[in-house]
Length: 359
Image (cartoon, rainbow, N blue to C red; front, side, top):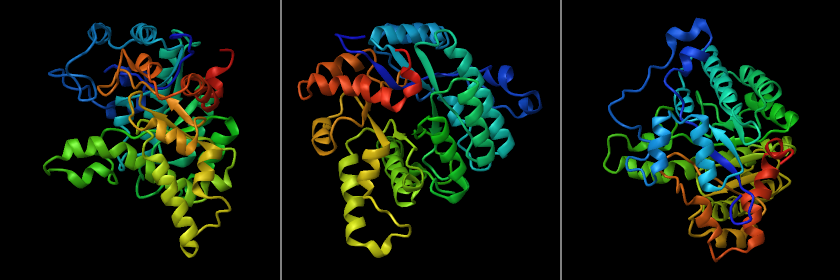
């Protein structure tokens, strides 16, 4: 709790240890396990110039559960939903063998479950799945939710092997998520390895990293929402809840208007009957995360209201505002206290009902 507000972090990251795969990957697959990263420098997703002494302490502790709980205490976070980092990166390859990709997802979920076991009331997690074989993904959703206690499923906004997320092959996955009452949380990754990734357009060109860092997450999330809305996924699965994380929320009002405008002006271009406007599907079934310092948040709230926006700290990644994410958000003078309460807790609890049970 911070300044009287309860805090449920919609997106806080683990930094997985090098020996995760040797300890958790099924024996037949260990020879194929990802190799540990070189120890010559800090990974690009971590801050190169730590702004708080806790970063050094956390790194020295291997970003273990105790250091994460300490970081949450510093920020004032009551409950956090954890997403992987390196474990996600190694799966972002179109050409992975589907059985091996599923084995890595299972290993990662087992490790994260054990990580959360250090304080299961405060540490929750989103389950990783492999999009290479949907039947295996569905099986892992059931296992992760029912046996491991996952409160969400990580959605991959990019196409894998040319299949967009509104492809008919993914229907069993959306049905499974709706059945088990967990959201699909679309979260881009900061890698260029998938064949269809915004960043690949700029490989070997000037400005590639800056352009990609600015564009990838919001652009991939915009396209993911468009796929789900115009591809009829929300219409066919009205109980499915989706979140669009780590891309800010400033893009949302314009994109909803643009999609609605197209829906109205070009009905002949609609391939699947859509009784509702895209914006109405968002209001019914979706959430978006906000960065604490996002400039146009008040304007976004004026456009779409304040009941579909959730807070995300992104600790310990280098773009996190830790240790000031929560305090800077609470200090904003352009939001009411009721709006702050909704974004810091109420909306996140609605997105993750399994995380908030008993809280």
